[in-house]
Length: 172
Image (cartoon, rainbow, N blue to C red; front, side):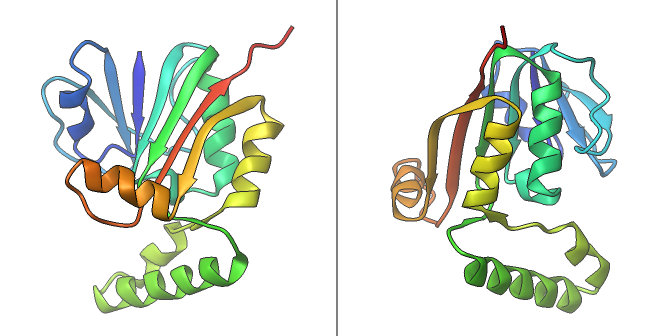
């Protein structure tokens, strides 16, 4: 089973044709017919412990504090389960993270929704690694910046992005 966390309308389900997909989002958005849509907060997923094969975050990992999102993914994943995240802002230093927060606050204010800035949590790579390690994930691949940008360009999406794959290591 795949849980598409922060799914929007569940668009990712069309790429996961052979998987059972639960699309979870905080907003009530019309779902694709090939995904079960559930309205819930990613900090408290309505899924039993150790029942999910893949926790998938497409441009959504940054909508909760990283430690909360990672901890909740670890709770619902089976041992050897994968956390896959891409297109969430990951920054190598606090200065760039603060600049991103300011840009987002200005964007949301200009759009007429200044309260949405509180839901934006640009990810510090050091905090991300610490959160992953603290709940038993092994990082298989973590990219931000130029390498991730090249990955997106191969898919025809030229933009700066991020990519993370981590496996929940079974405990003895």
